[in-house]
Each structure stands twice: as structure tokens, then as C-alpha cells.
Amino acid sequence: MTSTAVRAELAEMELCDLEQFLVSLGEDRFHARQIFQWAYKRGVADFQRMSDLSKALRASLESRVTLSTPRIVARERSADGTEKFVLETGATGGSPAQDTRRIESVFIPETPAMTLCISTQVGCAMGCAFCLTGKMGLVRNLTAGEIVGQVRVLGGVLSLLDTRFNIVLMGMGEPLHNYDQTMKALRILADGAGLAVSPRRVTLSTVGVVPGLDRLAAEPIMPNLAISLHATTEEQRSRLVPLSRKYRIEDVLAACRRFPVKRRDRITFEYVLLDGVNDAPEDARRLVRLLHGIRAKVNLIPLNEAAGIPFARPSDARVNAFAQILADHRVTVSVRKSRGRDIRAACGQLIVEGQKPSPGQRLAGAMGSPPA
Ligand code: SAH
Ligand code: SF4
Image (cartoon, rainbow, N blue to C red; front, side):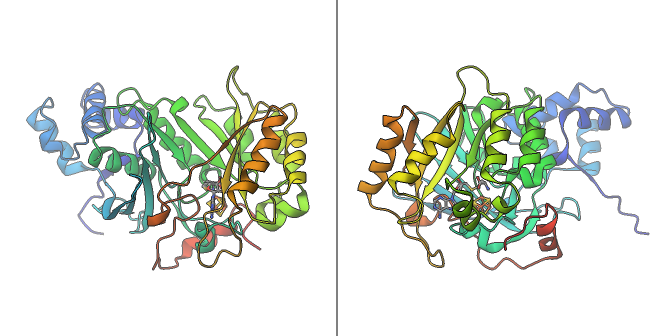
């Protein structure tokens, strides 16, 4: 046995965990709120700088607690202002479960809202045919602390921590395939003692993990929901989205119909347009019929092309014709502007080269629907 005690990991604690931890040290639980303020609102990871804590408590925390923070290993700025960050996890110690992996997070300076696009997994098990992240397979899940850590790091360097910003879970990974850590991350982000990111400012994008959708429907914390649909027939979707062989379009839409959507809110349906594959007028008309009775809006995403992706981006004329059919049938539709394509920060272009495969890749089958 080694005499070095493993230090507790603040990044993985919800406020209530930190309160309990302080009580176990014989300290007052209210210090948890002060520590959350420092760590999240002010981006301070060094306990010695938490000046409203007693010197004794600061020293005690320093010897017992660590706050692992992903390290920025690359930062690239696109001509349109989008910035892609490559972060390395587990960089300042942390738990042995958190090996060092590279993930990508993106800052999108939309006006007026600033948006952080963050990852929930290293790679992804779902293997969608048009997605580079899918090509990596799943390397491992991110912990809640690593998911929130991306927000702490980007928020810190972009001076956003004390401002309002949006978060989209549209980086690497399938959030509902890492359900517990994703939800824990949303609770930490929402905590009023810390960043206080309202769930209304968070959008969770999923390819349609039906049991995850049903669990999400019962959560006290409810982010906005985006469903990656991409196709209008079962045959077509199962070729593009392997998970569709397990959870069919009709299953996903049934889960959407029973999802508690508040008045005035809608579910977003994302639809990647692939030239000559799913972008015909019949597809648009079928999409209208499929979404009938669902409080829906559609976000069309013309494919971001990449080497190794065997599809092409449709012409603007085809994209507009598709959008027009939806609009003519009173379906709210928007076409996603592709941001950061010059630095490969656009949707589906997140992949970190040189990832070592790990035993975690076997997790790929854990939800039962690895790529074919
Ligand atoms: N796994 C989740 C969230 C991450 S992917 C999901 O699939 O919803 C975020 C979005 O990027 C999804 O809608 C996905 O379909 C889209 N996307 C993936 N590859 C793309 C590509 N090459 N071009 C455009 N959008 C892509
Ligand atoms: Fe995974 Fe989403 Fe990419 Fe599909 S589109 S492989 S679910 S990240």
C-alpha cells in the first residue's frame, strides 16, 4: 500500500457532494458555495487564491482535493470567428479513471448569443455514415467533470464565465450513450452557486437512443432537445444511422410524441442533407408527414464534406428547394450556416488524430448498437 492518499476530485462533485465532503472534514457546509463560486464563476483552480476561506481550510483543501482541468493543446480561429480547441483531459492529476485523451470543443460567436459546443465522449460508437467522429469509434466516455471542464476552460479563456452563453452538446459523442455523466454535468452547470447555466440555454442533440429519451423525459433538469433524424424511410435511415436498426424512426418519433415539451417550446429535428441521397422533394414531403402532430422545427444541415466521407454536399438550390417545401407546409425550418469549416470545426468534423485505441473501445457495444 502506498501512503499517498488519493485526493478527492472537485471537478466531479455536485454541490451536495462537496457539502458532504466538507462536513466529513468537520467544516461548515456553506463553504461549498464559496468554493463553487471560485471554481466556476471566477475560474480559480488554486485553493490558496480562494481568499474568503480561512487559511486553515485553504491548506486542508490543498492537501486533500484536486480540481482537474483540461489543458488546451491547440486553439485555431476560423475566418468567421469560430474557434476550435483541442483539449487534453486528466491533465492535472485527477482520478486514475481519467486517462489522458484529446477531445475537441468549439466556440461559436453567434450574435447575439455566444455558444460553446462541447463533447460528451471521446469518439462515438454510433458510426453514422457521414460523421468523422463516428469513424473513430468510441474510445471512452467523458466524466461529468471533463464535460463541465470544457466549459470552465473555454469560458475562462474567452471571458464568458460571468456572462450568459449557450451550450450545445453537439461535439464529439452521443450524449445519451453517456447518460449519467451527461446529466450530472448538466446539474453541475445549472447550479446557482456555480455557473448557473439554465437548462433552457442548453441543447442536447441525440441520434435517438430511445431509452435515454424516456429517462430524460422524467428529469428535473430539462435541456432543449434536438433529434438527429437525417432520413424519412427506415431503409434509408438504417444505412445512414446504424442505431436506426435498433430504434426505428417510428420508435424515435413515438418517444418524441411522449416527451414533455413545454408550451411554446419545440423539438428540433436535425437533418443532414446529402446530395442525391436524402434531399429529394419526396424526402421533404415525407418529412412533413412524419413530423405531423409533433411540436417540431427542422434544422437542415448541408453536409460538411471531408475526406473519407462518401457523400457530397447538395447545391444551394437543392437545399433551398427542400427548405421551401417544409416552409410551404408550415414547418418551421432553418438552414444551418456552416461555421469554422476552414479549421474543421463544423458539425461532424470533430476528430482528433492519433488517439490511441483503448480497452474503453469495447464500451462501444455497451448500449448494444455499435456500427455495423
Ligand atoms: N451524437 C449527437 C450529437 C453530436 S453530432 C447527434 O448525432 O445528434 C451533432 C450534429 O452534427 C448531428 O446532427 C450530426 O448529425 C451532425 N453531423 C455529423 N456529421 C456531419 C457532417 N459531416 N456534416 C454536417 N453535419 C454533421
Ligand atoms: Fe456519433 Fe452523432 Fe457522429 Fe452519429 S452524428 S457518429 S451519433 S457524433
